[in-house]
Length: 156
Length: 156
DNA sequence: CGGCCACGGTTCCAAGATGGAACCGACAGT
DNA sequence: ACTGTCGGTTCCATCTTGGAACCGTGGCCG
Image 1: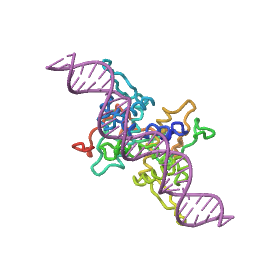
Image 2: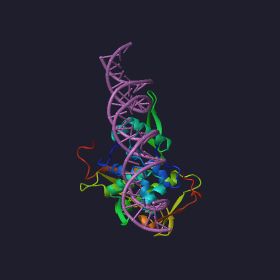
Image 3: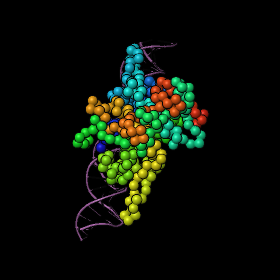
Image 4: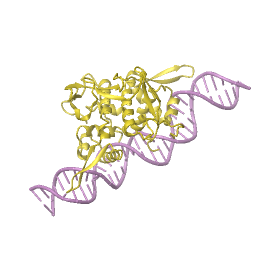
C-alpha cells in the first residue's frame, strides 16, 4: 500500500513522474530556480512542514536534482543547490507555467510574467519539435518503441 | 492534515502543480494522449487500483481535463476523452519525456521514441522562448509580477 | 557564565490518502 | 439460469501528510 513506484517503467514520462509527480518536489525546484537555497527559506516561502521539507530535500538530493553543500563550518550549515539535472527541469516548469497561464488564470491575468534576458522580451514557454521547430500537438506525434524498449514487458 | 491545496497561489506553476503534481494524474493524461478512453483500459495499462482510478478520473473531469461521455446506452457506459485543456498538457508531458530521456535513461537508450508526423522526423521536445525561439534556461529568465499579482499576499 | 537566538533538523501523533480485494448493478450471450 | 463485460463502490490495513514540540551546535550579549 505504499505509493506505486514507476521509476523503472519503460516510459520516461512515468520515470519522470516518479520524481516530478509530487507538488512539493515541483515547488521546491521552482523555488530553487528562483534562488532559494536554505532550509528556512524554503520553509518560509512554501509554508511546507519542516519534516516534509526535510524528507523532500533528501529525496531530491538522492535523485541528484539538488546538492547539499556546506556553506559554513562553525555551526555546520548546509544549503541546497540545483545541479545540472535539477536546473534542467526548469523548462518543464516553464511549460507548466504557460499551461497554467492559459487555463488556470482568471480575468485578472497572470500573477507572474517571465522576462527573457537574452532577447529582452516578456515571453512564455513554447514546446517545439527539435527537428522542425514547430509547436508540438498530441495528434502529430506518434510514440514508437526505442532501443531501450523491453522485449517482454518486465514492468511488474 | 489534508494535502496542501495550491490552486490559488499567485503562481501558475503552483496552480498547475496542484493538478499535475500527482503521478497518477500525469500518467492518466499520458495514457489518454495515447488513445485510451475506457476505465478498464486505463486500469489495465497503468495497474492502478480501481478506486484510485475512479477518484482520479472524477478529479480530472472536475478540473476539465477530461470529459465523461456516454458511448452507449443499453448498459450505460462512459468513456473519458481529453478536452482541449487536457490535450494542452501534452507539451508538458513531452518536456518531461525529454528530461527523462536525458537523465533517467540507462545505456540501453530510450524506451520510447517520438515521431513527428508533420515533419517526418524522430524528435524530442524542446522548450523555447515564444519571442526569440531560443531554448530557455533558468539563468536567462526573470520572473516579475504581472497583472494578476496580488498587492498584499493573501496566499494563506 | 547564563540566557537567548539562529539554523537545520528530528520526533510524535492525529487525520488523510493509497491500494488490494471483494462486492454491486445493468445488461448481453448461450 | 449461468456466466461474462464494463464501470464503479465499499472495506480495511498500511502509508503519507502536516502541525507542533523538541534537539543540538554554536554565536552573541550582558
